[in-house]
Image (cartoon, rainbow, N blue to C red):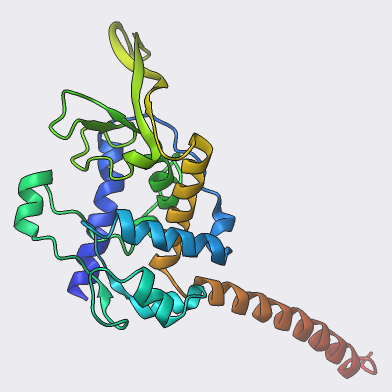
Length: 256
């Protein structure tokens, strides 16, 4: 329970860190329909174990839960298990916390609940944040890692998927501060490509969408069953309401 609480706090810290940074960058809307797309979830799981699980654990999910998205135990063992021996193991990492803090300035948070974190007022959901975050990295020579991020300025994490996306620079312009015309603020204008990645921009966006769908599913693997059960409950209540209404009419028909 203590680990679960710490994971939630770490996930929420990422969102609150964005807000505290004062960034007014709008978050893009994550395509929520992918959370029920089994093929998208399988692609997202592959991306997760290849690009995220090196540093970020998902310690509250066991590999065998991936059977819920249509994968067999053999497929899980052969294609997705690089840091565990048994399919019933949790998705942990071998990264030493002390080394991680020395390299990145902070221990990479557990990602089990990152996409289920509290929504930011006026910005969007946790899934919207991650979807935007993974697509707005840019080169910044003033940072120790060489990378910066629009929605998480001065982020300690380097761009893990830069080979897929390629490299880009952010273009800013000085504009008058709307709250104090005597001051100027830097406003983001656009990205300019530096080098191309192995994926086209559209393909990279699709890859990120699949990854975020998996992160969203991972935070609550039973959400699909819960939604389907909820539909049947509503149908039952609707039918029962009709029956109760007709019974009520039959019981009181002779009462004047």
